[in-house]
Amino acid sequence: MSTSLFNRLIATDDAAGALALRIPVGIIFAAHGAQKLFGWFGGYGLEGTGQFFGSVGLNPGYLLALLAGLAEFFGGLALVAGLLVRPAAAALAFAMLVAIFAVHWGKGFFAASGGYEFALALFAASLSLLFSGAGRFSVDRAIIGAR
Image 1: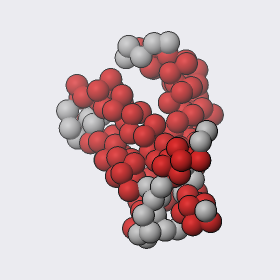
Image 2 (image 1 turned 135 degrees about the vertical axis):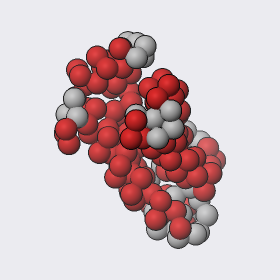
Image 3 (image 1 turned 30 degrees about the vertical axis):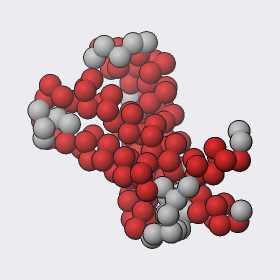
Image 4 (image 1 turned 180 degrees about the vertical axis):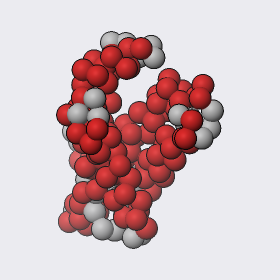
């Protein structure tokens, strides 16, 4: 990968506000990914999540559950660390768009009835980090500052 492309991927401003978004959103995504991948925190693991994905028309269910779980788990960890935040945020925003339209849309807005409210909030947070980058207190900023 060229240095110029890498610099654009980790580019960020020097603001501190992204930290307040990165940490809780990263924890939420990592936990949801762990549910999908490992069955932790009351999740169904890959087998159960794959069956669910297939039941809502996301096929092949197991493969898409694996991809979603990997994006959420490692993307969430990346947000917490502040490492490769823009690419992680792009993957997470895409995952939330799929969740909104494939799973939650038909159930209305509110999360209490299975609606898209929570996924929309996570999509907005991911999109914000995609635009802003990781911010001052991040590995991305340390790498950019070191160049």
